[in-house]
Image (tube, rainbow, N blue to C red; front, side, top):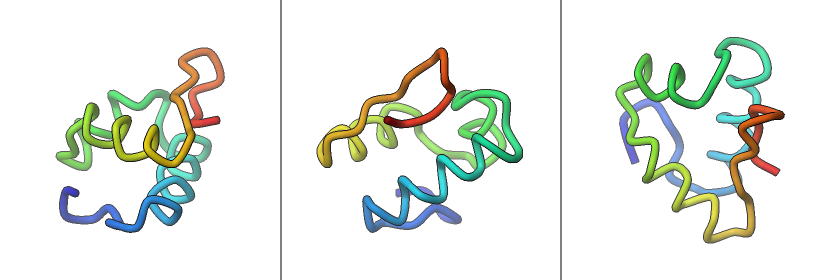
Length: 60
């Protein structure tokens, strides 16, 4: 996982959803700003049962 984002999937979920809710308009903006790999985040969170909802701009 990129620097600045946690490796633990549950903590990653919390951090990403909080950042999306409070600071970023979409996952792409968060990834660009944090230097993160969008697909890696999606795959990591999918492994624990969460999918990215584009409409809600959150992992649910």
